[in-house]
Image (cartoon, rainbow, N blue to C red):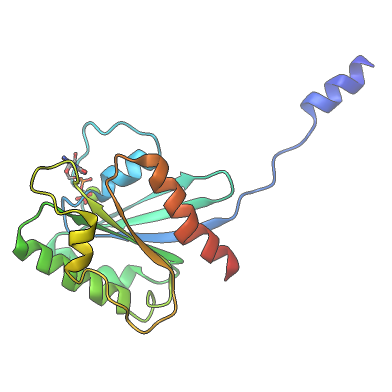
Length: 185
Ligand SMILES: Nc1nc2c(ncn2[C@@H]2O[C@H](COP(=O)(O)OP(=O)(O)O)[C@@H](O)[C@H]2O)c(=O)[nH]1
Ligand SMILES: [Mg+2]
């Protein structure tokens, strides 16, 4: 009997592997890409340093693991973004809602060209209107009004959400917008 109990408790074997999906996370420098990934991985928000080149983090969910590749957002690096799109199954674009009109215009152009790129144009995406806690921040509605997202003629799912601080709604949206459509592919 003891042996049966021991076997039941300890010999279940490893859990089945969770499916993994590759995502690309882009946006201008300072928009909050690294902060977002640290939040999702429940890491400290202190000592976040600027990303040079790119970095990859595995974000665990109950039913899947998202391998998110953050591409550095400096203007010298952005022209190389498209070289790292291959194999992506979803896109996260992070915006600074409190930035100047000029920076917002730059971000909008980058967002549009990324979402129209042949390797990304049919993928599910999530746009994060970040820095919502700042007094100068535009609301999600205002960001939408600024033509941040326009229908580009491709069937896909996508959503706008706000602030990296709301991790629970972020996780739900990520699963809803990215994990589930990827599973259907
Ligand atoms: N107030 C505020 N600061 C933020 C927010 N998100 C990121 N930051 C800060 O903005 C700076 C740049 O963030 P980071 O994640 O490195 O941006 P990245 O260059 O896009 O990776 C850091 O000092 C973060 O702490 C936010 O929603 N609100
Ligand atoms: Mg970064």
